[in-house]
Each structure stands twice: as structure tokens, then as C-alpha cells.
Length: 171
Image (cartoon, rainbow, N blue to C red; front, side, top):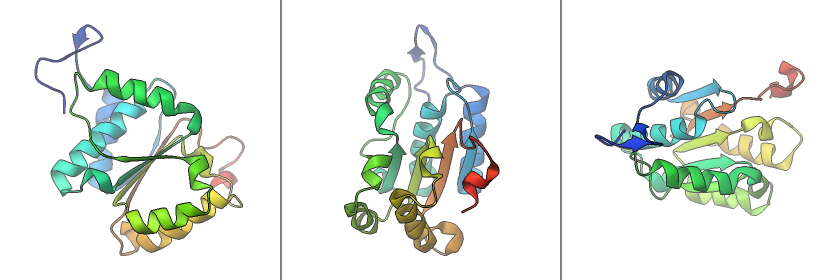
């Protein structure tokens, strides 16, 4: 996934040990919950994971959905541009914000797309069981999850999944 001889920020391009672990475990388990703080390399990890899922499982990039907070969308695009010189990145992935998932049309979007991979960056945006976005997301996963006979793999990455109690994620 690292381009041969590539430099990143003036140094030989490489993945950090935590990034390698996220990718390895994510591929082996067909899903993942990764607790990784700010600066741990979550963005590059899930981009590499998407690339390798395509190469190893034949999953088309347009069947991969990345959910991100609206506040990080511009930064994500900047990081993507920075990474593409040194790393093989996925092309044509679907990117939605959690606020877009709150819209009523997102149910039809998920049903039409039928993503085979969903990556939730900063997944704490889904912790409120009563929120429309969480309800829509869970309804879709109950039907489509690879662990329930479907073909959708779920990867959750965040540094702040639990803010008050493990009960935040009782659903």
C-alpha cells in the first residue's frame, strides 16, 4: 500500500505500528472497533484498509461508505491529497457526514447503495440511541451486517467512543 520509494513529509513513507495493527485486525476479522486518539493515524489506516479490502476481497470502492463528522470534511480532503503521493488510496468511495445521515433520505440512500463496507470515523456521533441517524444506521446494519447473513462489514474508529459511561453504547 506504500508506493515504492515514496516519501511522506520528507521521510520514507511507512505505516505506524498502530496503523498496521488496525489494518491487520480489520482484514482478519471482517470488522473492527479501534480506539485510537488524535494523531494516531486513523485516517490513513482506514484508507489503507479500504484499498486492501478491494484487493483481497474484491469489494468495489463505490460500495464503501465513509461516515465522518461534518467538521472534519475539509481536513479529510486535505489529508487525502497529502497521502496520495506516497500511498495507494481508494478511488470513488462514498463519503457522507453524520449530519447527512440524520436526513430522512439517508434511509433510501443506504438501501440503494447497499454498502459492503462502512467505516465510521469518530463514531461517537452514533452513540445517542434516540437520534434519527443512529436509528437509521442500526436499522440498516440489522439487515445488512455480515454477522447477520448480509455482506456489510463495519469498521469503527474513534478516540472518544465513551465519554461518560459504557452505557453510551448499550445499543
